[in-house]
Amino acid sequence: MPLNGSSPATAAGNRTSSSGGPGQPSSFWSLLALSLLALLTAATFVWNLLVLATILRVKTFHRAPHNLVASTAVADVLVAGLVMPLSLARELSSGRRWRLGRALCHVWVACDVLCCTASIWSVAAIALDRYWSITRHLEYTLRARRRASSVMIGLAWALSALISLAPLLGWGETYYSAEQERCQVSQEPSYTVFSTCGAFYLPLGVVLFVYWKIYKAAKFRIGGRCQNSVKLPVCFCVEVKEASHQPQMVFTARHATVTFQTDGETWREQKEKKAAMMVGILIGVFVLCWIPFFVTELISPLCSCTIAPVWKSIFLWLGYSNSFFNPLIYTAFNKNYNNAFKNLFVRPR
Image: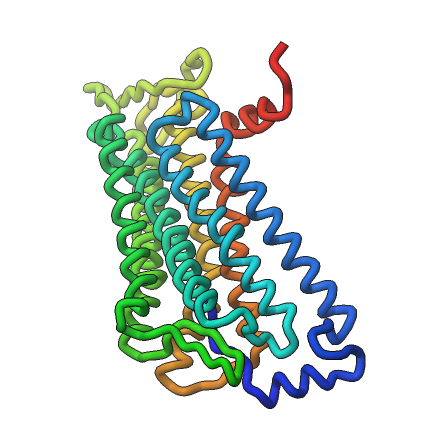
C-alpha cells in the first residue's frame, strides 16, 4: 500500500548527492538496501509459490483448512509478483519518484490495496479457523469447516476488492502528478478511515480477540482438569485421560484428594497447544509488520503531518515482509508441509 511520495526538494537533494548521478544509488548502504529488497521480493515469490504447488500436488491438502493457507499464499504471491517489483522500481529512482506513467500508477495502487488487504484478512481467517477448531471441535466438523472457510475466503477477497476499486469508481481517487512524479493512494480523509479500518484495524481487532479467547480456553482447560473427573464417595476423584502412547496411571494428591490420571498430554491437547502457539506467532508477526505503516497511513492525512520518505519506505517494506513470513510460520508448525516440500525435489523410486 503506497504512502506519500517525497517532496521535490528532497528529490533534488537526493539527485545532487556527492556519490552518484541521477538514478544511481547514493551510497553503499543504499545499494545494499536495494539488494536486500530485491532478495526479499524473490524469496517471497518463490516461497509462496512452493506452498501453492505443494497444496495442488498433495491430495490430502485439498480441504479445509489448507484452502485458507492457499488463499493467503495466492495473495502473498501476487504481492511479490505484481506489487513489490513496482515498489522496488520506485525505490531505484532518485527521490523515490514514480516514472512509470498514470495507467501503471493506478494499476499498482489497486493491486497493492487488493493483495495486501486479502493477505491480511486471510491471516485473520486462519486465526478464526484455529480458534473454532480448538473451542468447538465437536460442532466444527469437516463439513462445517469447509463451509466456514469458503465463506471467509469469499468475504476476504470481496472486501479487499471493494476497498481497492473504490478509488477507480470515484471515491478517493488515486493521486498522480506527472510534474512531481508522484503516485500514491488517495489521501481523502473519509477514504483513508474506510480503507485503513477495513484493511487493517478491523482484522486486527478480530485476531486480537481470537488470541485472547484461545488463551482463556487454554487456561480454563489446564485449570479445570480435575473438575470433570469422577468423584468417589471417599474423597477421591478419578480423571481418565488419553495419552499419546500407552496410558500410565499415576497418583497425585491435591487438597485431600487422589487423582488417577495418565502421564503425558493427550493427542488433542498437544494439537491445541501447537495450534495456539502458531496463531500467537502468526498474529505477533502480523502486528509487528503492519502496525507502523497503518498508524502513519491513518494519521498523515488527518493531521497533515510530514514523515521522512526513508521512514515511509521502511514501514511499507516492513508490511510487505509479512507476505514472506506467513508461509514460514504456518508451515513450520506442520510436518506434513515439510515432508511435502522434500517430495517436490525428490523423484519417487
